[in-house]
Length: 285
Image 1 (cartoon, helix red, strand yellow):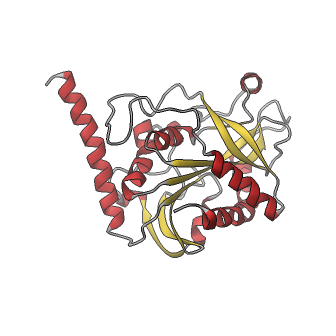
Image 2 (image 1 turned 180 degrees about the vertical axis):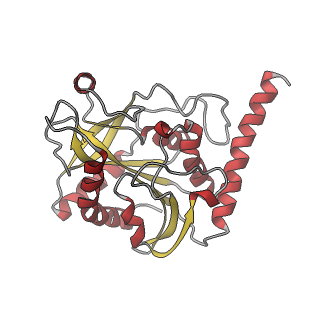
C-alpha cells in the first residue's frame, strides 16, 4: 500500500468513526442541539440540571474513550437549558491521561456531524494574573498552545475543514461580549484573558509560571486548546470560560492539589450555572 493510499484510509476512517458515533447518539435522543458544552473539573454538575435529559456513558458511544481524571463523570448528557436543546460532555478526556489528541478531540468531531454550531469550553485553571483570584471566572480571549503537539497533525480530511485553518480569532468576540454583558447583569466580575495549555499532569514550577507570565498568559491549564483548534478548523463558534481554582505556583505560597481544584469548582458551580443558563438562552441557533 502506498503512503497516499494509507493517508486516504486514515482520513476516511476518522470521518466514518465520527459518523458512527453521531448515529449512535441520534438513536438515543431526538434533540437537535446546535450548542455543545464541555464541562471541566468540578463543573459537571451543571448537566444534572438539564430538562428532559438523556445520559449516555462514553463507553456506549463508538470512538469515545473513558475519562479517568477525578471529577470527570464520563457521560454525554443531551437535554434542554431554558428550552434550548444542548449536548454536554460531563467531564472531558485529557492528553495527560495517555490518550492521543485524536481521541481527546473525537467528541468535537462528532458534535460537528450532529449539527452543533457553537461550542462552549469550560475548564479549571491556575491563575497567573494576580487579579484573577481563586474562584474568579475568566473568559478566554486567546490561547497559547504549549502542549508540544497539535490535534491537526497527520492526514487531513477536507470534509472536516482546511489543512491550514486561520487562527486569528479562535474565540468568538461576539460571544465574549455576551459573557461580559450577562455577567454584569448577575453582578459577577469576569475578566478576559489568555489561556496557556501545557501537557501536564504535573503542575507547573514557579520558573515555568514566570515564563508563562512573560509570554502574556493570564491562566494556565491542561485542556481546552486541542478542542478549540479542532472546533475552529470545522467552523464552529467557540466560547471559552476558565474557572480559576487556584493561584499558580510562585503566585501563591500555598502548595497546589487537585482536591482544592475540585472544591473551588463546586463552590463556583452555582454562579457558573446561572451564567451559562443566561448565555444559552441568548445564543444564536
